Image (cartoon, rainbow, N blue to C red; front, side):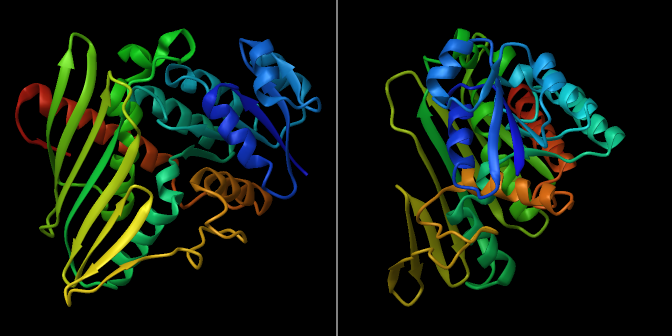
Length: 331
């Protein structure tokens, strides 16, 4: 059995905890959280050993994987501790707030010869897996243009309000927008340059829009926003190919062909390295299952590498520089 130690039992920790229940041969056996009573209530599992001290959990428990779901500003501290104990580690996105801290994590993984992966869930989300597949295979001809959007309410319920503190979360660009930045990197490789615009009130950055420049002429744009009103979360893309437009919106994937026909694409046959039907689970299951299988098979994660996670953060930093300087920035 693969023994998991969960670090952080808040909202994302619970998402990961529930996903592990569907993976055969896996058990969350320990959890570390500063609010141990809330962690007990949230996970509601008498078989889990709870700790308020991560160091103590790492010392006492025999763990195969550490899963870090703490606030972003704590990622580097927690990941380096885990990696230095020689434990394979998966960490919620983003890898960190700064490239220097991100590189510390990557270096610790290499030094200790253990696996490290950032949970960039969109690389495992079935509708995005499909976009990557049809682009790579040229199913609908040449890709001409693609637009990504990710919009939701600015959370008001995070622990100590850390999500609304730019020094702890990075706000919309680093916490939210990095999903699509990372997928663009996965889909098309590193862009040549970025041109960005953002909305900033004091230290709060709630909206960002970026154009990505590629030598092959594909037009790529991504928008992310956190709104103050209670606003429903949505993520979407629209990809214009030579022979069709593929649109993912409101949890529905539609294909519009040049001959005038349209079809809703069902993804039962599109599996992300899983034996389960994609209709019954989501990207969180797939990313965790993938990392567990990497550990089981002693195979380094290739679907997303530590260096790619650093690059995603570097691209966002370049976008912030572009918006602040009011000009295109080379990558």
